[in-house]
Every structure is written in structure tokens, then in C-alpha cells.
Image (tube, rainbow, N blue to C red):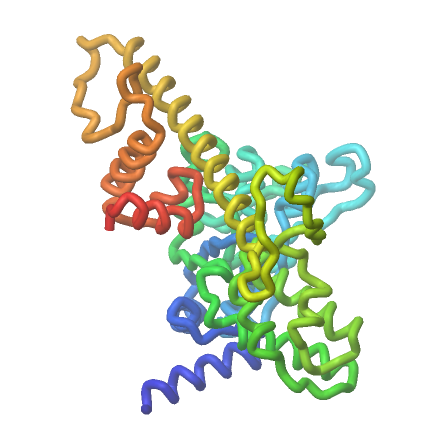
Length: 400
């Protein structure tokens, strides 16, 4: 009971002070990590999909750090043009470029002794990354148009919705910068990965909005809550927040029902009318009976899901086929006397005798699972499918 009480105190603390809402195991781990890393001067790399709350986590780390009395500067690297980003970060001298009519401090100078939050760090040009690496390692930089070396003491918290390991492989992100940024890495889960937190998030956003409107929050119906739990939430917490705020502000109500919810979420299927066809003109005669109604919606939904799965399968097989062809082409060009060849370790091959899509897909899943030592999240990323689809395929091919 004491451990549960401690965890509840932790949940309430992050909810009330920072707006970080959640009681799932994944969120509790993040809360503990924030508490551990905040008092240090370690740089932190926050990774997660858009809308998962990366800036909220960065602010919590800053507020719990010894630098909280000094500035917290937030910079969205993806929102600043590449030609201006370096000037914004490090400042410039008068006349350094066209339009530089006066001397200007950069964000790093403004954040001296404090914390700078570099959001969407994966969007930063490779040239600017070089200067950023120098600041992180030595604290030194030069304004644009100046030879004078400035020195600052700034803690760096970076965030991205990209997989920086992939960007390093493509040559768009520096590996040395990546390792300097991720003294500690926090991975924020997508909302669909923690549906048990949805009731807490709904209550948090609804209570906040109701207080602003001067009305009492009375809750949400169970059937409406079940609908929210089953939604994909591609926009994550931000999407849920906007939905709850929109319903309450437009309906002026403190109780969310299923009927209200349906007005503001896109329907699963377009509306339809069932028109009974004469028996003589029907391909298949379906006798009308009130006792055994046919659920047309379920049939349509099943067909749409089947079509979607087929398209995903076609896309995955096509991508993997292209990759295999590229690999085979590269192998042909390699001179045997220069390299050592090893077995493909189970990598499936495609030939005229092996064109069965199910076999190819099953072999690819087995190979990728072995490659990532059973890590299903990495396997799903590598195959270009969702974890939900991967779990379904694993059960379908009896691979568990």
C-alpha cells in the first residue's frame, strides 16, 4: 500500500505542477527518469511522435533542475529557415549579412547559465550541427560576422520525432553530435500505447476547460470513454486535448456523452441507406426478417480492413523486394578478393519458384525478428508497419 501511495503522489505531482498526466507503467518510468536526471547537468535527448508532450517533459526537467532560476529558451529548429537558424542560435554582428542592421545576441547567449530546448533537432542543417557540437563540447562559439569567441554555460535538451539513427545512416545527422546530445535518452510513448491513461487525460483537459468557462465538470460516459480508448490517435495527446476542449467549449457542457462525441469525431464509415432490391433483380436474394437483421456495417468494416491489409502487404513486399534487388546488385559489384562474404543468416530470397506472398511475408517477419532479437517495436519500424499489425501477423503465422 505504501508503494501505491508513493506512486500516486508522484502522479499527482507531475499532473498538478507540469501538466504531465499518466499513471501507466511507461509514464511512471518517465517520471522517475525526470527526477533522476533533472538535478544533473547531463544533456537530454527526448524522442517521440508529434503531440506526445516533448516540450512539457523538457520544461519539467528545467523546473526541477538547479538552473531553474536562469532562462529557459525554447527553439523550434524546424520552424526557422535554414539560412537564419545559425544566426538565431549564435547571433550576428551588424552588417554580417543583408538585413543585419544591428548586432544581435543568439539564443545561446540569452540562455547563459540556463537551459536551451532544441525542438525538432533532426531538422537542423548539417553545417549548423558542426557549430552546435562545438558549443556543447567547449561552450564556445562565434557570432556570424565576428572573430571574437564567446563562451557560455548552457544545458542542452533536444527533441525529435525522427529516428536519428536512420538520419545518421543517410548522412543528414552527425553521429558525434548524436552521442553528445543523448547523455540520457527519454522515449515518450504514443497515446495508443498507453490507453489506460486516456481517462486521466480527458479529466485533466476537461476540468481545465470547464474552469475557464465557469462550469462544473461532471465526467464522461463509459461508452464515450470506450470509443476514445479505441481510436488510433495519430496526433497523440495534442489531438485528444483539442477534441475535449472543442466539445466542451462548443456544447457548453460538463458531461461528455457518446452522442456529443460522435458529432466531433470522423465516422468510421460514410452514412449509407439500405434499399431493398426486388427479388427478380437481385444477384443474391436476402429475405428481410426483423428477427435476424444483417449487420451491414460490420460487413463493410471487415471489407475495408481487409482491403487496407492487402494494400499494406503489397507495399511492404514491394519495398522489401526493392531492397533485396539493391542488395543483390551491390553484391555482384563487390570483388571477392577484397571482401569476406558471410551467410545471409536466414534472409529470405525471391525467385521464380518462390513467389507466394504469404511465404515471403512470413519469412521476412521471422528474419527481422531474429535480427532485432525479438524486439517487436524495432521489427515493426524496419518492416514499415505498425506494432498492432505486426502482433496480428505474428498470431496469424503462429510465430509467438
